[in-house]
Amino acid sequence: MNPFRSLFLFLALAVALAACGPAPRTVAGFVVDVKSTSLTEIQSFTLRTPDGQELVFKVGALELDGGAFPAGHLRQHMALNQAVAVAYREEGGERVAYRLVDATWLQP
Image (tube, rainbow, N blue to C red; front, side, top):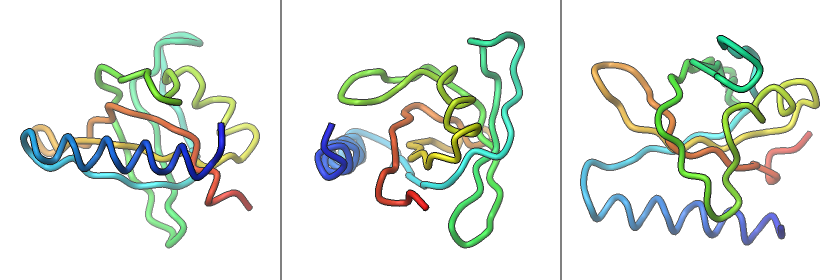
């Protein structure tokens, strides 16, 4: 998929969802840690942003349309140092991811 199309779809979804309820947040960076119970069951992951912040996300129910991918794919992104964009909500003081897409605009 064209990287600009992925970015456009990601941002369009974030804007549409913002109009429907609590404002979702987005961030992009590189996966530096994954906590899981199996190869496909990811509980949480840590993302390092370009400015050096390390943010921990719980994995919620993920949207898988429009170029989004399942949480199990995060291990590949970590191994290959490929950037990820995360759409998330703050719930009970925790960041809960609900959408994961390639952040091709951040590739080293």
